[in-house]
Amino acid sequence: MTIYLPIAEISVNAFVILGMGAAVGFLSGIFGVGGGFLITPLLIFYNIPPAVAVATGANQVVASSFSGALSHFRRGTLDVKLGLVLLVGGITGAAAGVFIFSFLRTIGQLDLIISLMYVTFLSTIGGLMLWESIRSLLRARANQPVSLRRPGQHNWVHRLPLKMRFKKSKIYLSAIPVVALGFAIGILTSVMGVGGGFIMVPAMIYLLRIPTNVVIGTSLFQIIFVTAFTTVIQATTNQSVDVFLAGLLMVAGVVGAQYGVRAGRMLRGEQLRAGLALLVLGTGVRLGYDLVATPQELYSVAATMVGYQ
Amino acid sequence: MRALLTIAAAALMAAGMLATKASAQSRAPRLDIGISTNVIPITSDFAGEDLIVFGAIDGADPDLLRADFYDVVVTLEGPSLESVVRKKARVFGIWINRSSMRFEPAPLSYSLSSTLPVELIADSIELSDLGIGVQNIHLTPTGAVGDGSSIPEFRNALLRLRTADGLYQRDPIGVEYVSSSLFRATLRLPANVPVGEHKLRAFLFQGGEFVMERELPLSVVKTGLEQFIFEYAHQHSLIYGLFAVLLAMITGWLGSVLFRKD
Image (tube, rainbow over all chains, first blue to last red; front, top):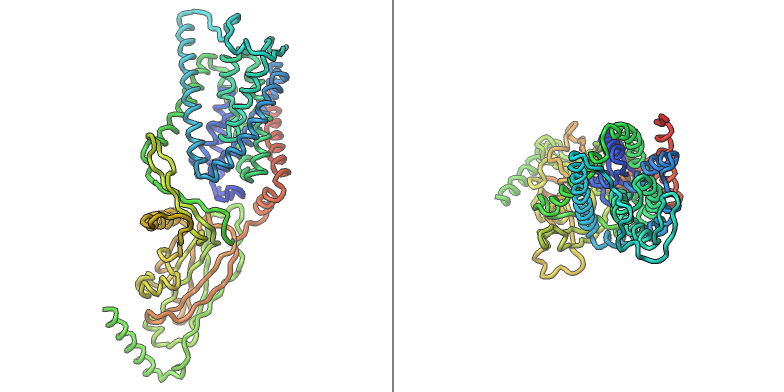
């Protein structure tokens, strides 16, 4: 079934898009991530213009993170105060990111920067996560207790001023690293079209030492707002949000995610983290290969808006 | 060889005229074309389309018609926009866009249909003058082009990429005679046909000589919901963005409610 996407201005096979949405939704359900880092490259691979893929990817993540945050809120694993502090940085970062995005698009290096950022972040985070999860898998095999959080162990982050108390997370932490983390993720959201959960979650656990049980819910909470904000800003500055495309992805993604969550319950925590690490690392390596390998086509052509229609 | 052919053609023409004692000796043949609609709608299931153009050659010499002495070329040119061609080069091991060239507005799409491959219809100078054929799409670089030695490579890359995308195409036998003076041309509109004002042009050649040209406007428009969404996204972009977010939230909420087990 072919459908014409009004903003991307191309005809696509609706079942391919639905399939992508469902597959990514399934994986995001298993691993508790938004899936933006998978959907945007897939869309670009399927010839959707990168600008549209990024903006529409952000819109799709609104749906998956809202769905996820709701269930965390019901279960009480969401720290609203911490989420709001993250959000202050997130919104500022997202606004800055959209301008960076527009600028890169005019100088013709948008695709390169998007690819480079994907490769850098996915490979680094994926590598670190894989290393950590292999170690805990080995420890679990040796029957040692597995603990992500090492209480009492503080790093430089905890010596910063402007401390705030976050009751739900049971921590006393400076607002500076929280806002800074939000800001960095905000930029990624608007430039890469990702929610940033795959960076946010490890950073919150390992850098800020926030208890794992509130991390995913809180990260999803702030992702809703940052991706929603990005969607609106992209829609107003670049007119690159395709609601047809986003709608198809969302519906399939939300359904896929539910089955993913069920499948995820059959796996242990360390296995889940190792699986996610492999997924993240694999995507990074694949995109990195495309940057290094000699392309089949050296030229690309783009029409500007100058002319007469 | 070409001179010989021209002489032969002239002789044939003269013979034809003599044979019919043509009263239309002073009258040149005329070309007329017609299309059933001048608006092509892009519907939600648009996957490319064939545009059928009918045409007639009036006042033509019947004997020459019988001898396939007339050739017809029908083209459809899309809206013109400036284009940038970029070339990748390896920098520190990764491939990035290094050099680029900007071309003055040229058709984004070009579809050609003819009775014979155009190279066999007329000589290359004539084709170039009339702008017939993918190779003769006028591409003028703007801005700094250095010594100009790289113009052909960027120009050819643009033509090749658009041809690969199906935006530039030709059908050398797409014009068929229905009767001796009536013809039907089939032009392919690709699935990615640009929206906007297109120009339908038809050229008549008599024995390799250009006789006349006809032109008709044709608009390719988005319709219904697609048109509405596109206009809304551009004219009321804030409301559009908010709507996209609302849609996402409703979908997410429905998902969490419908599948809620606990």
